[in-house]
Length: 250
Image: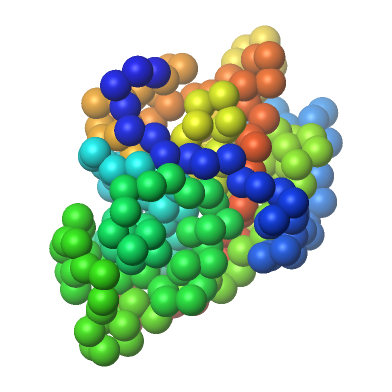
């Protein structure tokens, strides 16, 4: 996909081993034989994370930055907030990456972004407009950003990674999940699972390239990565199982 800014740097699993930052996915695997029925049920009640994202969140646009690893992760956090009943929350993904990279327009990976969020939180765009080049945050901004630290994140195993992500998205507690693909050198947020009449499955994702992007049958900034030739097997994936409700009157 030429002409697009991406920015995912393949995570070094020797330096950052699996489950070194967050525990392993604890909710188990959903048998493939149950996937279609579970998808049909969740779609009937609009229970997949994609419904919450489309209703309460916005498609992000990383523009000319290599910060997909931050935009996708922060988009997952926004979706988790929406699913907890907090609407209209816009978090500044650029601020996290820009501060973390000391102003350099460089790539990163999912766990790296999670660690940055854990350390300092995420500012809201109402407090710091997107793409503001701020290396240092005021004490008030730090206080506000710290409200949006991590709460309940779990990393998915690299073996059978597609099955793990599907289980996170449509299991007992559907969870938005960051997914990074080495073939794409890109990280996006997975929000649901699609299925065809022939029982072919795919991950429904929201990209950070604005609303003109589309893939695999979705439009408006959304796409489907179908399970063909390993294309839907993420190199790295982290599920957001819950957030703290830090804002009142939402």
